[in-house]
Image (tube, rainbow, N blue to C red; front, side):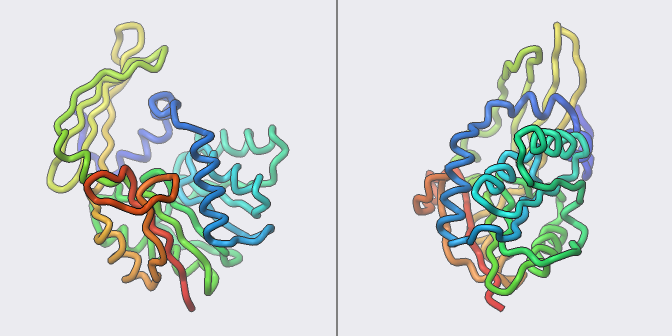
Length: 251
């Protein structure tokens, strides 16, 4: 079994296996979601916005195309290298940097910040998550927005544990997902040509919508809207796939 390493994400997110496993993510859905958010927040062209834990930058590139000054931060050097190269190849202006969200930010204040696709809850310590949100709050201008998109665990928990094999040629992923002390854990074995290439683990805190609202409000945010999916529909605890908070720094 993989180790329950508190910094599991540093290794896993910087592997080609991680990107292969999640290569099926829907680009059109992601672009429509970001456009819907920009419209809901009435962001003006040329606004300085940041995609926190941006991965390979798919949401950051959409923000750029919508006329924003888009920055993307991620812990993974491999992801940032790809994002920077892809942005240049497409003739976009988005800028990418390696940064750990647990560290404070510097530079000009942001008009909006985005933390999407459950890029949070990794640290096995809610105090650390609170610090992450406080750093984001401090870097935003008064009146600026923060969007957080997180897994809604309520429909998932009754299905656990789950074992499945996911094929993403040339790899097969043997996955075992289960609940452990309030954390959804996924053990991942990577197979290529019938040979094991490595074992990894994902660990994500189970947060309810109320938990996240409380964390936002403790940081100083005012929660203005709660969506349950990428189409912007209202949140239903029993069935919504996502918890999407649109929060604002009022002063």
